[in-house]
Structures are given as structure tokens and as C-alpha cells.
Length: 476
Image (cartoon, rainbow, N blue to C red):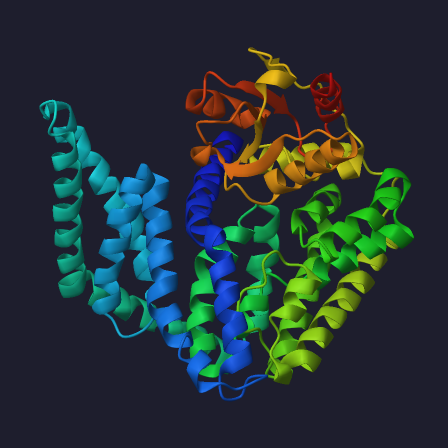
């Protein structure tokens, strides 16, 4: 039975990862749109009619096209991305509201169909006609999909989007929105937070923000208060390793916005999910009470991102929602910790349980357990004369790989090593990468992408002894 549950969870997580994978690389575009909206619309900080003219085209055309391109590219590289963007244009024209959901359908579908067309015909093309086939096959398929989307898919997705919007409005009107924490907070510990936040809430919230200038949906999952309250409770009333590690974890969670760092604490004492749920509910209730929300998605869920995306008329409500969520979560978690029996809990075991549920090593787990991994270095091993570019690669090319790249850059700077270090998604590893650093679970995929590069496998990106070894080797 557990195997079946694990398989189902893995499938749900994979589906959620695909949804959020279309949104997360484009969060910068959502933030740009939110910033322009906050500044220049009539009730913004510095109203400007000319600059405000950017708002509608960006949310109706630019953002869906970026999502459609990203979805197609996830399935079939740039070729799938181009066809996905053109197919997405069809649903944009075929509907009146912003087509985020339509883009998330048409982008991957177009990439998949382009891949199938190439599988059927590409091997049969005579030498010298490859470019002719590539250009016309993608152009013809894209045109057909765009026309189908305008005539049929656009209206269908538009109706579905309207139905979802009305459902959200009904929940808000009935005052039931705080109850969503009963689903959202447990879903975080199952690593469905990005799927829910970026796959569902961000598209719906963006449409709501276009109409009203803000949306409460952006803070349903991203509020850092519930997690902060639990970590503060451990800092005051925890025992042993959990008490010692909680303050540092609170800084990473609240300021850095990496919420997964508090999941092991909940897994260590599952009754703490009650504190997270009631903390989330109180934060949402406060937002409703003050009619507060954000202009655009706060990603990562850092207090800095939250404040940056808050419109002028929502500062009181948003700040109070974080404070109250923290206080409620802290109070309940403290009561649970003080009344629970038993000695020190095993934080390392809980972290391992979290990583097993996630399906890979956590980039921040080492800051909780102090664990040092014994990583494998795959041949060939290159010396300093052969290395010009080092790539940190992870699933999305963001988050954990970016932190690892930043750490190594700082070490190189201190040792006067002039080698380019950057982070990429594993599917976007450049051909000129000399050393590729990945988590162990992704090394085989990286080697398939660039078999001639040196591959370094690590358990986590934040605390690897291989960085110092690499520095010493490249200094020589």
C-alpha cells in the first residue's frame, strides 16, 4: 500500500512540477508586470498614462506567450517552444481574458505534437532538404494549431477559466477562503506548494489583479508567517539539534523565502501541522478583513518579495497577516512542544524523510543537520588550463543551483580564480561547459547531455566539501 501511495505521490509531484515549471522561469516577467502596474496605473504610486499602456498587452499577450513558449520548450526544446508560442496565440485571440490556463495547455501540447511529427518524417528527409523540412513542418503545424485554438480550444478554455474564477469568487464571498489552509499547508510538506502556488494561484491571481489592482490569492501559499512561527517555537522550546538549528532556519525561511527548510520540523512532530494550518487560516482571515492582497506573485516567499509586491492600500493588512500568522503558529507550536513527551527528536531522520518524499536531496538540508556528503567526481578530470566555464545544473536552473553557483563564485573571487560560474536548467546546459556540478540524482541526465565534460556529483549545493577541493585544484 505504501508503494502505491509513494507512486501516486510521485506522479502528482511530477505533474505539479510540470505545471510550476512553466510559470517559475517567467516569474521575473510577472514581477515586472506587477511593478509597472503598481507604479503607473491611475491609483498607482506615480500615475502615468503612457507607461500604464504596458499593463494590458503584457498580461494579455506577453505573459501567456512566455508560458506557452516555456511549456513547448520543456517538451521539445526551442522547436517545441516556438510552435507552443504560436499555438498559444490562438487561444489568446480566441478568448477575452488573459489565457494563462490556455497557454499551459497549448504550449506542452504543441511541443508534443511537433516531436511526434519529427519522429514520423525527420529520418526520411533527403540530405540537403533538412532546413526546408524543419522550417515548413513547424510553420504548418503551428498555423494549424493556432487556427484550431482560435475556433475551438480558446472558447473552451475561456469557459473553464471563467468557471474557476467564479468558484474562487464564491469561496471568497462565503468567507471560506481561510479553510483553504487545511489543504495548502499539508500540501507544502508533500512538495505540492509550487504546483499549487505557481500552477493555479498565480494565473488566477494575475487575472484578479488586472481587474482590481491586487489579489489575495498571491498570499495564500506564500505567506512566510506559519513557517516562521513553527521555527521560532523550536528556537525557544525545542531540544538539542532542532533547537540549535531553528534560528538559522528561520532566517533562511523568512528572509530568503525557502519554505522547505521548515518541513523536516513538521515531519519530526506531525501534530505541528495544526500550527501551520491555523497560522495560515489566521493570515488569510486578516487579509480578508483588511481587503488586502499583492500586485503580483511573491517568489520566493520572502518577506522582502511580499513587501515589494504590496500595493499602497494593502500594507497594513499584508504586514498584519504575516505578524498574526506567525503569532498564531508560534503559540500553537509552542504549546505542542511544551506538552509533548519524550526526549530530543531526530531532525536528521526527519530531513531524510522529507528528502524521500521530495524524491531528491534538499539544497538546504545540510543547514539543519550539518551533514557532509561524500560526492563522486566522474572522469575526465580537468586541470586549470582546460576549464573556462563551470555550470551548476538543477531541474529548473533556479533556486538551489543559483545558491551553489553563488557560493563557488565567492570562493573563486577570494582565491583570484578567473573562471566563469553560472547556473542553468539541466536541459539548457551549454555546449562549452567544462565542469558540470549536479545533485547525485541528476548526474546521469547531465552526463547524457554533455558526456565529454567533467561531472561532479554532490548531495547538496549549500554545503559540499568538493567546492574547496575544486578551488585547490584550479588554483594550481
